[in-house]
Image (cartoon, rainbow, N blue to C red; front, top):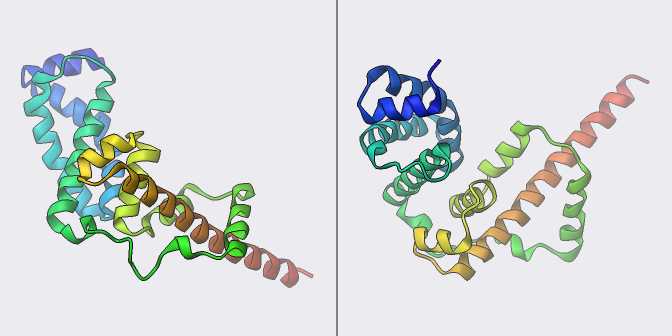
Length: 199
């Protein structure tokens, strides 16, 4: 089995076996990563395919500094952002006055939402909750909370202010709590109903 060093060296020499090994090792993760941004399996697959062509061409510039997977992830994330910019330019227009504003949640509702911290959710439920976010919120949430981009990096990438990035991340978190709280209540009702049916 080829080591990562062998794969990188082989890819720099345009070795087909090394390129295939690189693709097989990382394609699955990168498809999942891209999907978190574009929310479409077909689009994510197309973007990742194009990215690997770019990776094979630009790997000669990889200097071995930092994580190699991290280098690949940056390419995928940047391509996902570029895709959203081209396809849905409106998400980069201010959405501060959108009809749904999770910051308008009442004190009672916001306190109630915090109860989800003690609840257990499946990976699918959490991913579904993230997918329900408005695209700009989902984009910033993924970049900051999953990919560890700083607000400065997000602001530079999306051409927005750092304060805007922080504000939208806060709104994303509140919206996630609201959605997961509804999921929790539905699960509790289901469990209660099943319990009554067994009596």
